[in-house]
Each structure stands twice: as structure tokens, then as C-alpha cells.
Image 1 (cartoon, rainbow, N blue to C red):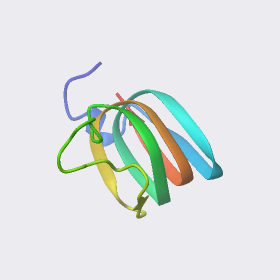
Image 2: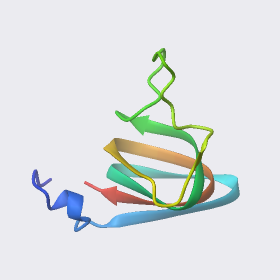
Image 3: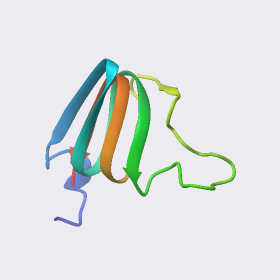
Length: 90
């Protein structure tokens, strides 16, 4: 794994995930997620948000994220019920 801006430029590739009513999940090692079409995330595993007991609740789960929204962190699993995301790999 490279430790420079190479990863943030998307040069390590990305995985596309699309869902329409039925939950879809991807697993792997992801650094950045870009919402390509309005998306509802139902769950994520990693160091981003939604930590149990967090106050205030900072979870992205269950809300509609608009196209163009992006967030970074270390993610190993993402489940969506609608929309399209690009998950950039480490």
C-alpha cells in the first residue's frame, strides 16, 4: 500500500456499487467514497462514522446522500439500498 497522494488521486482503482430497492454490499479496503447518484447507505464497517454510542449520532446510515457528496476514511464494507457509489481502493 502506498502512503502518498497516489491513493487520493484514484489511481488504485474504484469499485462501483448500484442498488435499487434491494440492499447491495461491497467488501474490500476503501479510502474514499463518492456518491454518483443519490444514495441511501444502510451500513458501513470501518473508521468513518456511526460509532456505537457516539453523541451526537453521526451516522450516515438511513439518510439520502446527494450525488457529488464524498467522504474519506478506512472502510471494509458498505451496504446501500438505493443509488450508486464509487468506492476508491487503498
